[in-house]
Length: 220
Image (cartoon, rainbow, N blue to C red; front, side, top):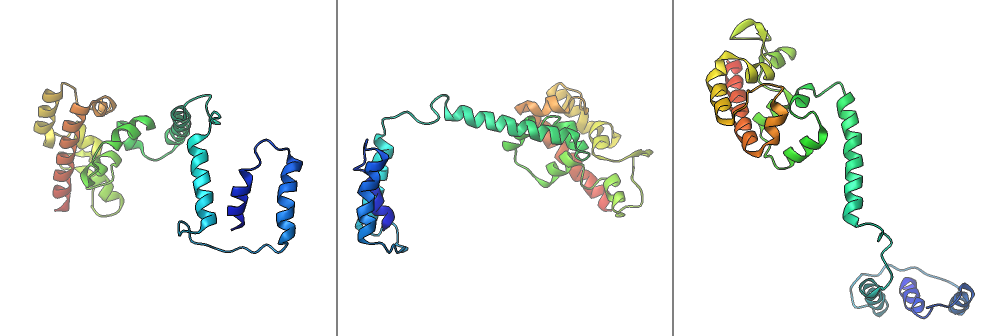
């Protein structure tokens, strides 16, 4: 209730000096030196609260002075803050010892942020972008498979990059994709491919099919 009273009294201050304001408030406190605090429900028809809300709304809608941040648009401030956050994230991302597979697709954080925001994530796509999935190398690491090597060549480690780039078991699908998008499927081209909406959709579809087949082969 005291907050409501103050809100109403403040409207009479206008340009009075600080001493004048104290003269206004002091008698009200002297009349009731014991200040008690009560919790009251908002928007419940209590006159003081309703009046305080009305005055606050009026002040927000009719304030004639310039906004405190009028030297540049709020959208600019948000953009600067976001850019600073992404730059700090990029430093940690680049210096980190993990996520090497992910960096093959997204060498920069802002690219990953931009692309993945509009990409529907599936389990197969997550396995592609992290290298954590049904690949011999990954399964062998956790002792779920005796060998980390690929069935195509006993000297080749079967990880996600191998099956996407060079494994002959997926040659037909890879050649079909390269013909369709006009780009050689290799880690050097991955960032360029995922940047293009049309190429990315077809590339991710290819990746998911390859990952699914790998999982089935290694499950047996």
